[in-house]
Length: 331
Image (tube, rainbow, N blue to C red; front, side, top):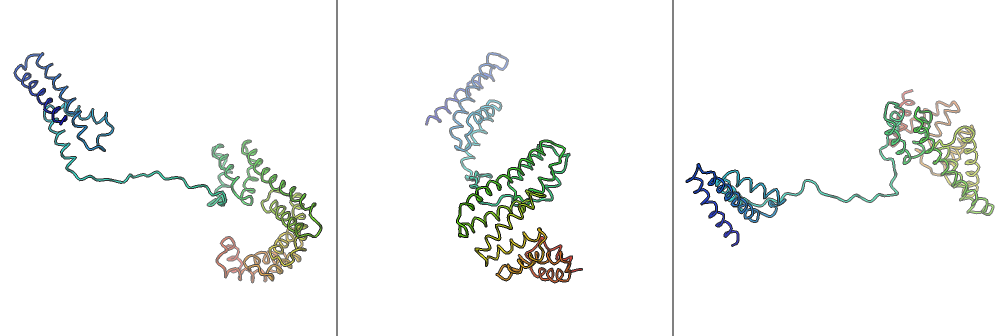
C-alpha cells in the first residue's frame, strides 16, 4: 500500500513539472523546477523499484539503486516505464537456480604414514640441480624437497652438488646428508647400549643384533658412508647379522642380508651359498635370482648369468631389470 501511495505521489510530482516545462519552455525557472521535480521522482521510483525487485537481484543495494535512479533520471518518462516493465517481467519469468561454478571443499587430513616422494623423478632432479643457470633459490627449494625422499635416491643427488659453485647449495646438501647420517648413528648408539645390557644368547640380544644389522646396512644402502666408513659399516652389519642368524637360522630374510653383505666384501662363494639358502627357505625367486646372476657374473660364469636372466624374463614385475634382461637374452 505504501509503495502505491509513493508511486501516485511521484506521478503527481512529475506531471506538473512536465506541464511547467512545456508551457514555459523559455523560462529558466521552469527548467530548474522540472529538474528538481524529476530528480525527486527518480529517487522515489528507485526506492519503490528496489523493494519490488526479487531479493536475489536487489543486492548489492547501493549499486542497484544508482542504476535505477540513473535510468529514470536520464530517460524521462520512458525510463520509468522501462523500470516498471522490467519489474513485472522479472517476476513473470521462471526462477532458474544455478549451482555455483565453484564450491569450497575441506582439505583432506595429512596421512603421516603415507610414503613421501611419490612421483619423484631422479633423472629430472639431477639435471635440474646440476643446472647452474637455474635460480639458486629454486634449486634450494628442490634440495629441501629431497629431505622427504628416501636416502637411497636422495644421497647420490646430494653428493653431486657438494662441489657446486654456490656455497648455499653446498652447505644445504652437506647439512641434509649429515642429518640423515646422525639420525642413524644416534639409533645405532641406543641399540648398542641395549645390546651390551642384554643377556648373552638371549632372544632380546638376538633381536637387538638384528636392529643393529639393519641400521648399519642403512648407512651403506643410503650411501651415507664411503670408503673406510662404508667398509666398517659392512663389517659391523655382517657381525650382527651372524649373531641374529645364530638365534634364527631359518630366517630367509637374514640369509639374503648375509649374502648382500658378503658380496661387496669380496666373499663371493659365501654370498652364493647364502643366496641359495634363502631360496631354499622359501624366499621368492624374483628376489634372489638377480643377486645369483650378479654373483655368477663376478665368478665369470656367463652361461649361468644367461640362464638366470632368461628365467627372470618370465616375470613382468621387474621393470628396472628389463633392459638388463633384454641384453642377456639377445646376447
